[in-house]
Amino acid sequence: MKSVRILAITAVLALVATWPLAAATVVIKLGTVVPDGSVWHKILRQLGADWRKETEGRVTLRIYAGGTQGTEAAMIKRMNFNQLQAASFSIIGLAEIDDAFNVFAIPMFYDSYGELNHVMEKLTPVLDARIQTRGLRRLNWGHGGWVYVFSKGPVRTIDDVKKLKLFTSAGDDRAVQWYKDNGFRPVPLAVSDMMTSLQTCMVEAIPVTPLSALAFQWYQQTPNMLNLGLAPLVGATLITERAWGRIDPADQVKMLAATAKAEQQLLVEIPRQDEEALAQMKARSLKVNEPADDSWRTTAAEFARSWRGTFVPADVYDQAVRERDAYRAAHGSGR
Image 1 (cartoon, rainbow, N blue to C red):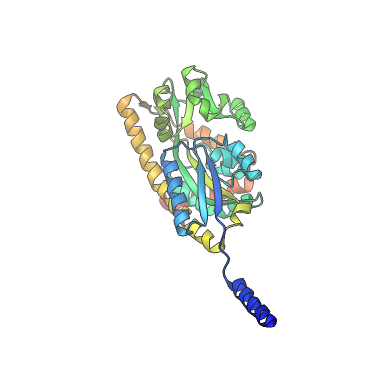
Image 2: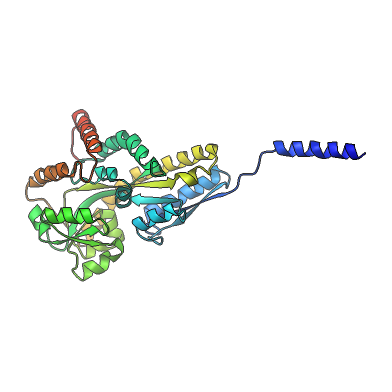
């Protein structure tokens, strides 16, 4: 009888061993500086809902918006210590991780979203490989709009800009020095200090997208905009390889499908909202000023070349130039 019981217990244990183990819930804590309730935040929330639904609750996204986890530099450190597993970065944070991302911030390097998207597609494998050596994985690209100069007084020439105290992102000493070397008056600050700095005239001009200028009401302190797009505001959502490795491969596929959908939403929605924001500000108090001449492009081309091998690795810069010029040859240029 004892031997029968042992055989029965052994059989049960063998059967249990073949049952699939219930996957533990993976919680992904994501930080971002995008404002709570903004279009970017809403799309992130939808992404979280999609992840939860498609993985049947095995992956949960917990979002910390509005810079509650600190600056983007601070979020990078938090990811290193596993306090955050993911973050949606602007170009500021991306460039801190790897200089190669500065290729999307070169002044007046791109004339259209078509050019930008073409170059982005071609450079994606290179950029993904670079960040993977740092233990990170890109989930999707983000779009923030197109950057223009908003200022307290009218700006029409580069010399006009050089006379003004210009906002630059705090923490990038090289960029500050580059501005100084080229005759500008940079004022490095955190974005959270922008309104106070504008109100006290610590800053007189800001390079920002129309959507952000309206959302944060900065345009009320800078009621002039130069009608010349300087650069796209590119972003991306990154996750640590450590966290990604905890997720079942089948769920990873579902998650990437959801992030691709979020990327497409941003690509369509942000340009549209940028245009709407500009129309709203013009209907209130914003004055749009035209550039005085074409010297902007000549100077911008000189600036771009100075970024090669300094702010942007030479090989990445050269590939971007080739791809951009190939797109222009096929489609023309101009926004």
